[in-house]
Length: 249
Ligand code: URA
Image (cartoon, rainbow, N blue to C red; front, side, top):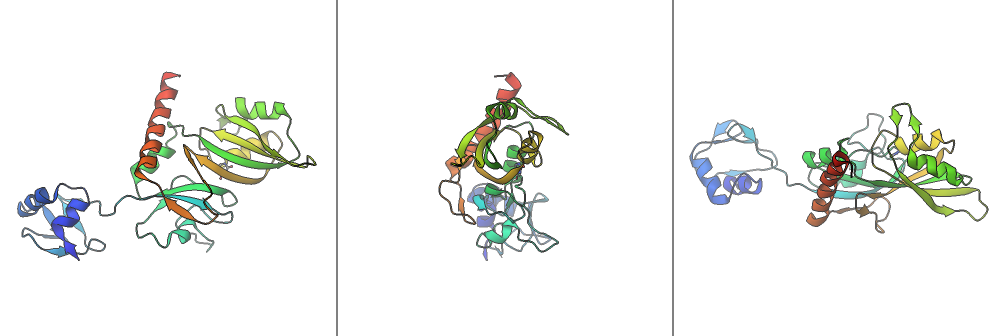
């Protein structure tokens, strides 16, 4: 249990002193009752606290970088009982959810947060945060195939935007290759569909970069919190990517 004015201040309503004034002015309700006196203790996890009729944001925002294994759903629940990404977030008290999604079979870098505005900013189609994937295919696609992936391929929901594609690794016997591809859109199953369109179906797919963030040695199935600087940089990148597109630069 914590003092109401402290909980309000932590939720970003105002400074602790200003929150005291807000309480004594009768603007705060706890579980449907107006509370005017100071010193009332509340449970920030379970009590419903309103200021001027609006629920306060009780959870602090957290931002998580997760190395998703394959065979895990980018969701918070699965009616079929399969593993979901939040099964790996048990130690985090805040209710985080994935920013966009990776397919069940795709592994690699996935962000999770409880900051809805941040999640929308990164996934909104008008923003173009780069995402880099390593796609393993059978055989070694010719350079002209990579050029097609770069300039745009026709999918059932339209042409893909310009992308970058390069050889990341080629097996010594040329039986398989890992292509590094960077896309600036987040359509459903986009990378798999792009490779299908050029007749090199993806055997294995891993996201290795999102914006400026990389996995950086984070083991599969593990997560870490982003630093405030990383969050700010990602937010900037999303906003800038919108302007770049708008100004045609
Ligand atoms: N593209 C895909 O095909 N799958 C993913 O999980 C992400 C991007």
